[in-house]
Length: 404
Ligand code: FEO
Image (tube, rainbow, N blue to C red; front, side, top):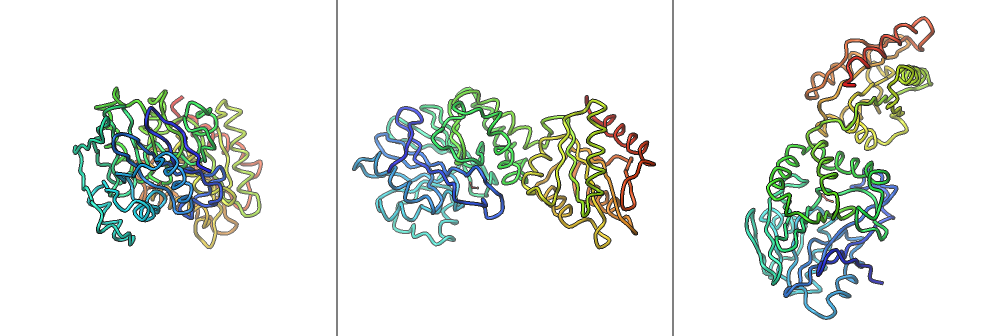
């Protein structure tokens, strides 16, 4: 059965929802699923904007065939070639052999690399500033390199103000019928998945997102719809989401608050983390979030690290090193370019307490624009009541460093 929704006038969502995929990119859990968004414009010419993951190809085809109702598909416009959007290209070419493909030079290169038989089709290579007219609608192309692959572009329909934003402004989470962001309580139910998507998938490329936002700022008043390749379409309150993207890509925290991530083998480091959380709340800072790194997917830790201003790392020493799962979290923060955070450290070890020095060295030498508080909570095996005043001072040092 076809499953489409009208976006505006002659533009339709023809994508699909995926609740079967367990790990996005085979790494990030998506318990709420994901949508692969593709859009079909029925102008004098018919235009398909991007495709979907191979697993959803059948749904895409059914949706397109329903709306075309016998008309040919004239153009296939590819903004982004990652296989979660590009994998169905070849099937489209087989079904509509006369379709003309519009995309960037690098995207055509990638199509060939992935083995798509595009030769024999009319290939329209576009670059930033080029335009293409489909009848009533004229679109213009804007390069968006590294948002999130080098070939990416976004397409702006100057006729109706629709921005086809590729991976930008996307989110994890299946739509399940609710196409528009204003049909859900986005700030309550979607923002965490949107942040987890952006920070883990495109987090490394903040400067490139900033460049795209700068380009968009010149036409902000003309953008009426944002149609991303994942998650809801935006037609109201666009600045709410644009502002979030601006913060995330500048690596600025959304909130003054404390993330306490602990690595604990037998519960003693965990107990210290909990004691600190209570102490902070007792002193008036209740925007405190405690996570066990062994039981929290690192994509969630990354998302929270982008949200909050302060990060307390509490780690046991393991094989004279940082506990491996904590080390992995640090490596991920580095890989995703997180910056501008204040760290405080809790270390533990039964005969050689090394984790604090090692975490501090990692943060100071491997990451950018980070502050590590000089106060550190150190313990041998477990935290005892004789360290209550140290814990108190440690909490005070964190609070004093906050912008409250
Ligand atoms: Fe959703 Fe970069 O692909």
